[in-house]
Amino acid sequence: MKRRLTTLGFMLLWEGSMGWAQNAAAEPGVASRQPPRPAMERTLQGGLSSGRWWADSQIVARLGMTPAQQKKMDDIFQQNRLKLIDLTAALDKEEALLEPMVEADQPDATKIRAQVDRIAQARGELEKANANMLLGIRLVLTPNQWRDLQVVAKPRIRRLQHQNDDPSGASPTGSAPIPKKQR
Image (cartoon, rainbow, N blue to C red; front, side, top):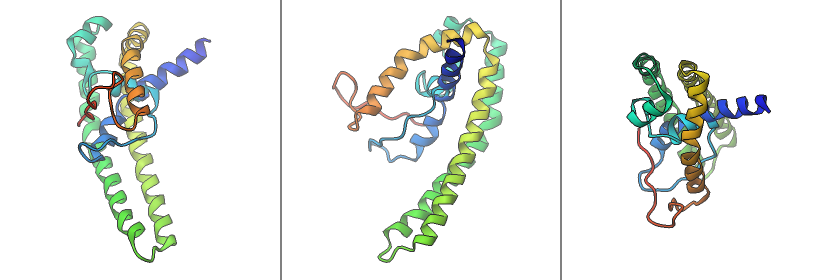
C-alpha cells in the first residue's frame, strides 16, 4: 500500500508542468483533446495555480513552506526554463515540418515515418527535461509537505480530468468553457 501511494505521489508531482508546454502549441480558443499527463505534472502545474504555484501564498501557508524552499524552487525553475522553451520550440518545428508532408497530394510514407521519428525524439527530450526539473522541485519538499500538496491538488486535478473528458472544454457545471492555461 505504501509503495502504491509513493508511486501515485510521484505521478502526481510529474503531472503538473508539461501542460503549459503542450497547451502553448495548441491554437487559442480551440479545445484540443490531449492524452492524460503523468500525475506529478498534474500536481505541479495543472492541478494547482499555473506556473510557479510555490509563490501562491495560500499554498505556501498550507504546506508550511519556507522562503528558502521557495527560492530553491524558483532557482530550479529558472535553471530549466530556457531549455524547456527551446525544446518546446524544437518539437513545434518538427510538428510543423510534418504537416505539409501529410497534406501532399502524393504523401511520401518514408519521409513521413522519418519525420514522425524526429517528432517522437523531440517530444522525448522535452519530457525528460521536464521530468528532471519537476523531480528537482519535488526533492525540495518534505514528506509532509508532499502529502499536503497531494491533498491540495486532488480536487483541482479531478476538475481538470472532467474537463479533459469533455471535448467541448465545458466546465464540469456545464457553463462556459474553461480557458486553456497559457505559458
